[in-house]
Length: 99
Image (cartoon, rainbow, N blue to C red):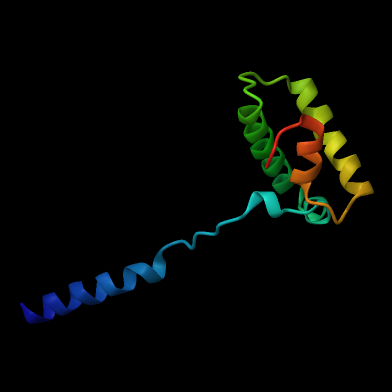
């Protein structure tokens, strides 16, 4: 019985070692140069998150996929011009929302 208890305790103590790490990202701190350096798949996810967040901020309950693609192109163009700026700065200026 004691050996079984020891085995269970060992297994429980190892559980935290096998858990996935969680990372917190402050989206408002992402700069344009960081965005442009992201792989395409990560840029796509970041753009979708930002689009959803700004749709919420501007109370826009729909998605215009053509406009969405144009918005991404506009953000990339702005970021190429202002690589040291935070993306949120440009988006706030473009939409008239506050961070």
